[in-house]
Length: 131
Image (cartoon, rainbow, N blue to C red; front, side):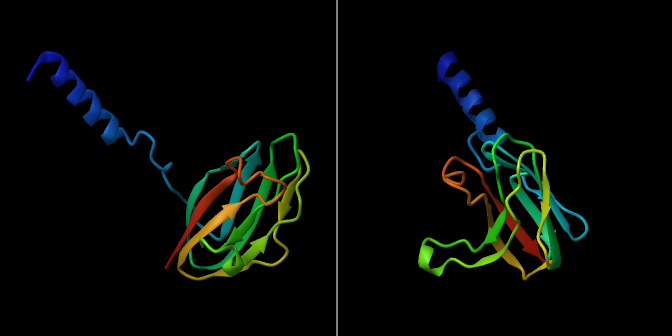
């Protein structure tokens, strides 16, 4: 094997193990409060894990536009989408919460900002609820 091919193989292996282009790591939430920051056009942390049961949503708008946070089913068919909970609209600098705690069973859910086209611009994430 030539030197340049060997170098390319090493660089490729390093990129694969570093997770280039992969999904961001999941953050595990301890307790029952799922707290995220919203801005243009991100939910941070983007991927979360939490225990099943009663979950309180808290969203802090750190952006310049209005945002919200919705927990919904993951489906390819919009007619079968289920919304499990949502916050009110958060204006810049505002913190909003879900009025009543959500009761989520074990599974995978989608987090999204459903205002205008924010979700299409990348403001979404994944919530894994585990036992």
